Amino acid sequence: MDGDLKTLARLDESARLDVDGSDAVARGWLEQARTYVAGCGPGPAVGSLAILEAELALFVDRDPVAAEAFGREAVTSGSSLGETDIATAGRAYVGLALVSQGRVADGMAMLDQAVT
Image (cartoon, rainbow, N blue to C red; front, side):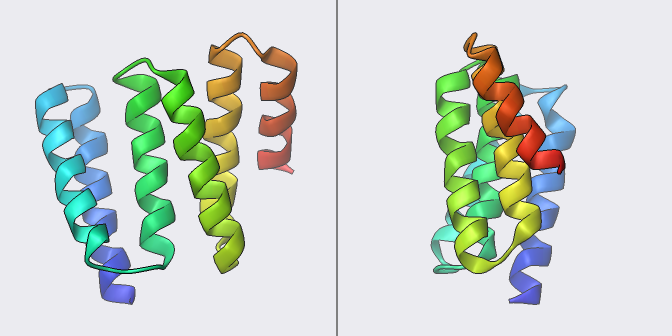
């Protein structure tokens, strides 16, 4: 599984580098990550992909509703596996997405959970 996470991390890093550049390139990396995770089965890679999906939904697509859903998926995945980093990042994206939707009190509460 360590090799799986390292590969996903490289895909994640590549997509993040392209968020400020070409949306098409970032989406290409995202599609590679989706294909890769589909072959991994249950595990941390699922939550890591959800984090990447949340980031792209929020910052590239400007779709806070989708970002919230992906963030919640990361929280669920990370929590069920005991992967606190994944769950924490998921909470942060849920919080940011809620604030972006105008649900400031709920979003700030979720962000507070992410950092404490």
